[in-house]
Image (cartoon, rainbow, N blue to C red; front, side, top):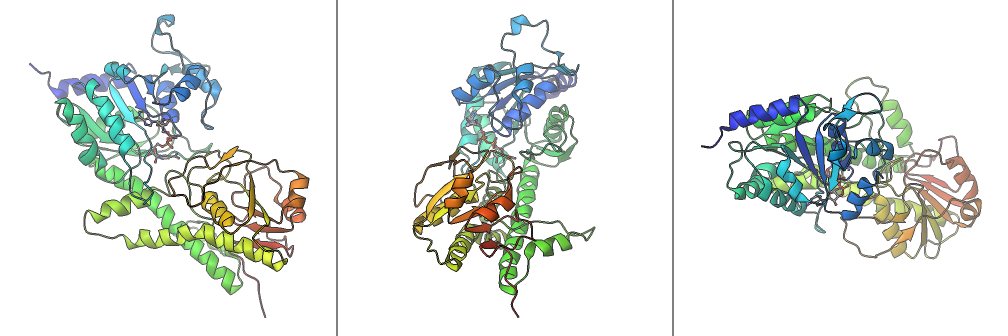
Length: 473
Ligand SMILES: NC(=O)c1ccc[n+]([C@@H]2O[C@H](COP(=O)([O-])OP(=O)(O)OC[C@H]3O[C@@H](n4cnc5c(N)ncnc54)[C@H](O)[C@@H]3O)[C@@H](O)[C@H]2O)c1
């Protein structure tokens, strides 16, 4: 006779509560690795599974490849020989009971897991359609090891409906029924790479289960990490919550970008205007213009949502408009480079252009889908001789969901006085801390500041700022 799922779920609940549960995390990237580490630090045993053997080997050696996960933390929890341990939990350096993180490429280790979290990539196709192939492959990998009472959580950011319409049918190939024999939920990740204040351990999140029990178990599992969890009514509600959050950023960035273009024409300074607007203590949240939106989330999720809406005969015009504005920004900044050079009598064709900062965000090493990619491509297409400097990114591009018209591969150039004196234009795309932008303005012939890096008092004739127009009359 099959053991009733309620008994199984009570057992799972007890194992989570007593930290004797084993959780597997599939995909050990920017999201999955911090999560796996957080579970281990919460006292759970973690099977950390990735298809990338090099990544797994690095973890086995206690070497982190993710900026937000120090190697020292890994070394504390990566213990590969269970027989060397007295128990599954030990005390960490800070005296807390910690679990064990076991990096592996072997899906077979799922057999002993109580819960599985899928944290694999969700890129776009060349035509900017959702590509959930990685999710489907991970789900198919779970099937042979799925057992009664297991909790499966999808965490990869995706369009509403993925958990129920795409993942569920794959998992049910096992012969087990979701919500009856095993538990299924969606819990989005809100990690903010490079942010030391808000981490996976204190960012509140939401959980949506196929049943109330599924949602409650997922909340309990993620609750071990320490941050508050809000349970919503379904996986789709949780999926849409994540898409909505990032779409909110996407459309507000587009508004700031449009305002920047207006300020250029009106002879105003968008940075001054935004700083003034944000003195309002309610009802306003500052967003800033830039060379465009990048990364794995804010750039991608609105397209996923817009695509999913089409199934319901709805075209999300707001997202499309924001996409049009944001996608134009690298070309707009390329235009500013051309204008800055032209004012000094230099043609863009053949000009030496230095791009500063290719990571998609300040002070991080993630350069996926960076707007610098499209900007460099546009500059190369117009015949510029492009170099870049980024202390965090040694080679560029790394990965891009964009189609490529003009393939290029560059390595970061050291930021020397000689370099600055020989370039015709330095274009600041991402202002990492620790770079002296005044020095750049003083040394380069022309500078385009596309991110508000240069102090507003700086008024060298060769300087052009995104969102800042010349006052006339
Ligand atoms: N990076 C962020 O800031 C961020 C924030 C919130 C949510 N997300 C979302 O989280 C998900 C993961 O993003 P990421 O940035 O961690 O991606 P990533 O590319 O850094 O890492 C994904 C990892 O998954 C591995 N992988 C691929 N297929 C696999 C499989 N079948 N089984 C096991 N491992 C597999 C890859 O080798 C890689 O190591 C995406 O859906 C993303 O949109 C990302």
